[in-house]
Image 1 (cartoon, each protein chain N blue to C red):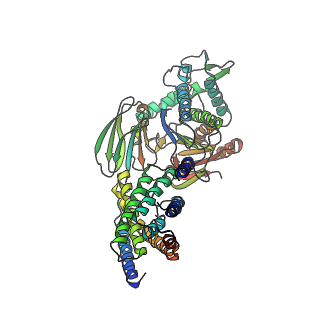
Image 2 (cartoon, each protein chain N blue to C red):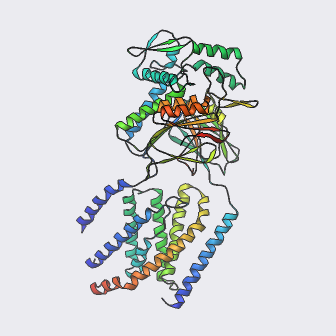
Image 3 (cartoon, rainbow over the protein chains, first blue to last red):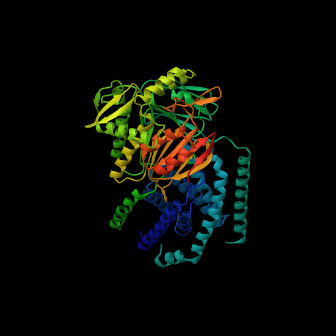
Length: 172
Length: 125
Length: 312
């Protein structure tokens, strides 16, 4: 792989990890372990600027490393993050590639919604309770707001053209 | 970002937000009982979990370390109604339905706790 | 590249142990003292939990007044009026019981065994014991005592039976605290059947535990590094007619009617807290204030689901 691309992926992965760790200190309301999904800023940027495989890679590494560092590997919170991260990435890939009707902000909002949906589904299975669904509306509202925020930040970063310049300069 | 995608975004966000708010209001209006689970342990091992919202008028027989304990679930509450222990403290506790004090049959090393979010770390008294 | 990533992983893995978790790392339930003791350690090893369990099981054996065990215990002492050699910890337990009873825990008497049993048997049948029987027991207590002799020798004088139920758990918690201090462990919660609790520090920023009181819905105390001893009528009280009779009996009058529904004592001494929580159930509020001043404890007295006395 192109060394420069590798370096860039390293920076992006590290950023995603740091954001996710900082985010994990925010107390979860309602459902234990539920997260906002701020790391999607990086995932979105990667998806739009580098590609699908790169975004998937950073997603996996992010979830694993954060779980190791926070000591939550293989716990309910870990599986919640895993499900949320991948459901959200999957839907964002679909919307980004095929359904071109929405801007990055719209895609981010859809991603955020599926991020919490994934987490709630795993929590429901783990705690064996359908009652958790009752938290979905209020959590969805916070996810929508987060989604807009994440989308705006991602858009800002992309618009600075930093990554685009790197790609053109080093050919990847 | 052009006007068209912006419009689409707003429609998307607006409808999602609306749906969430409506759902939230519906839930608020038609509140259901909290999910309460009674966990029965012998010494440190969980031997039985009972969903207090689902089971009603059910009987359970748990083998403790010194004999059998007869547990009954009724109207979202759980109690020990029969036990071979000498003091019968567990039977005297009656039905519990909230997380607070567990039912303990020390003679049989059986404990029944109701898991749930309690506002305190521990409750005395 | 490979070496770098390998190195990074080795640097990050130690961080995995630094996660702040709300769950105790070691938790064990021990059934003894006729109830369930819960050990919750937020630091330490499995060996620490086992050592604490050993302390509980040993003191449970020693304080047992219902049956003989494989070591000389209270039941054994109650069968004779001769000199009996006991282990040093049982001797110590009897010493502090005697001390507490004579000094500050006036209405606690370690020789209330047969008086308590009399009330317990009667209340089981929803009856009050006969006046004459109560008087007989009260006289027995008046004419009995425990002689603490040299070389861990005890002599029980008189016919009243020794019952250390009101103080044994607190004493056990004192021993547990000594152990935890010796191992430099500070984050724990040791719950002795909810009536005797040893609070260390919580695994949070300020280390305070939020302590509620049964039937007092909106009341909360923030406590850490102390013993919380509670005596209450609620679970073991029997209502006959208009009066509620409890298992806490005044050793001098023989009455099983208490001034309060519950008393909570916060102290830095387990056995004293336990003895006081029993004794103060039969005290007046003035006597509570005196005890607070002389022992440096904090007391909360509850009646009819309301706080009728509180220090701070």
